[in-house]
Length: 233
Image 1 (cartoon, one colour):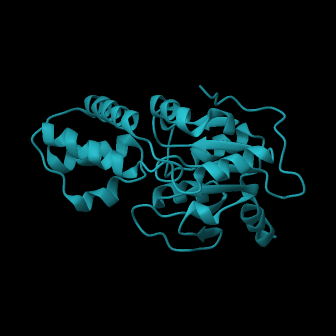
Image 2: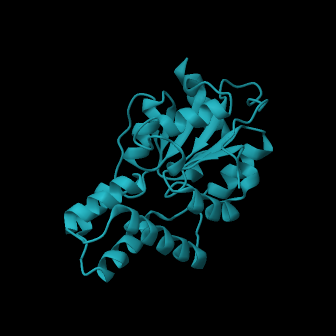
């Protein structure tokens, strides 16, 4: 398991104002946003309820407490939030055990950041048990620390996860580049004061100040991320 304890003495990227890269997981590094919806659909079907496909945009990218709570309220299902969370995590873990595709460009980007000793953190709204499972495919060696959604007082869209990651790497949030795929994650990163690269997965995201939108991780490399910091000056 990768520790969330601050990584003391972590080096910054040489010759660059970029101090750290903070990466979301689901839909950003691994192609799993659809997996969550599939599992939610299956679980609620077993409870006798059909999910409206329009709800997918409501629950994507958020913490389980929000998405599961919304679905319970929307369907009127007779289940507690704690019970549903267990079913969803169990179903998702089984699903990624069968197949866990990485997003195009993810493996190359992680290898490049590691090769240049760029402090990197994985910051996810998923629970620790899910992160540790996914790390086996991503490679835990690529991350100085990881932050799980069930390890912070407030998860995305609040800034806490990204502030925690920046502090753990000894980095100024304003000198951190965040890569996210949902509006919820983007809101969290921007509230933390980071520069955001948005790679939309399920719903569109528009460009804004301190926010660059790309179509794929294949457009993102270390030169690109360092360039974002230069533009901020």
